[in-house]
Length: 516
Image (cartoon, rainbow, N blue to C red; front, side):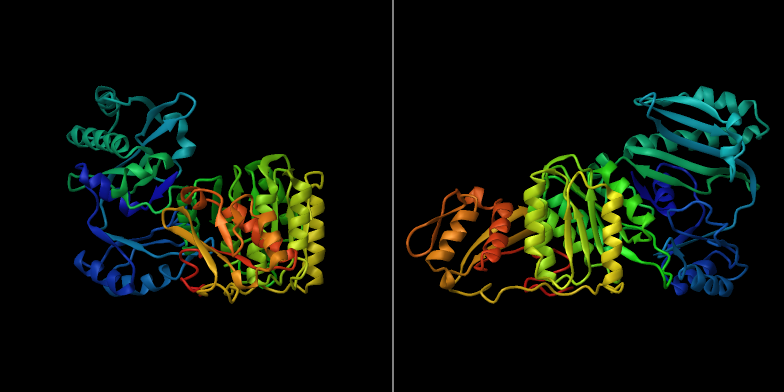
């Protein structure tokens, strides 16, 4: 589920007629001070972070003046929640609260229907008052039964003059949830005030991942549930996933402590359950994953290559650990080629253990280890019968033997023949916004090299005596990345490095392969 920040949810509620506190989301102390001044000085400031208990973490303050608000902003905007920086602070007017209610519309997965939860005692700790929460069914077409809402209010101590406003606010929240296809819309608290208003004092909104593309107006970059605003690498990875639909690719940054003795690693899984087991094993061995990555569902070699490149954009990891389910139906040699290509381009100098369990695992391990044999660091492949704990033990021994050396992201190495007018080149198109080129060093393709290329290109090329012809249509050629990455690696292993698949990662590489 994709999330909205409090101020974003409130803006949507306001569009549907609900009253929200006066104020604004601010990104700098100067903006905070100016907003506080416009509110008369005394105000409420709340960090915009996807976390619970913001007040307990020091993320909610009540400055008495604009000057104090500016000073508080320095601290709040310097906070990190789980190692992710706070980028915005919501500055709002103070409200003289009379009554607090809890309102939540969410999807009941068991009933496969929306439900409204209404408590006449809102605020913190509502979970501990579950017996006092009213549950009301929500019709997907007509919404909640407003007569039932009025009946609950009629039995409360809330003054009757507020009832119409509360009913309208609840109806507006449910209507909003339906219009934006939300998984949940929570207002806690929905308050009445001493000056006679009904105000949505807080909001939490999550959107169904599969509905995000229908709602560009929400401005959601990544249609996934994250506990932090998307990082640069998460945006890059998501764009790759959206561009290339062959298999799946998930990348998320994980919280780290930043302690001097913390040993962070790049983590690359394949299949949810097996990846979780593997993460447990490597954590038990004393490591902290800097990320969670999953490439599964028979991904292309290019997609696995991109995943490895993105993982290795993380500064300071001491190793690269890959392990999946061990019974995956996907062809593991495609993953081996993709990972090996990334490692070779970057000159990997931190240890790596990759468990390639599943179809063609024997071939995959041979490819990985042979392709990485000349790298500065050791790369070891395992198979499905090797338990994650054994893989983690071997990984720990390799990291220790390497002295815990920390990785430094770097430019990829590109062969000199790339860009040459003498080389053969054809384009590959992996999806919207992601494309590259296959380069063949025709000048150095003697008879033996040509034989190796033809033997390993998967039927993409054919010899015409003075170079190569395409054995497939131009349309088919655009999607032959897996075949040509395999050809690149196999030709290099045979001693004829005459093929190179140039796949710049948007957001990391420019056209010449520079790190952005």
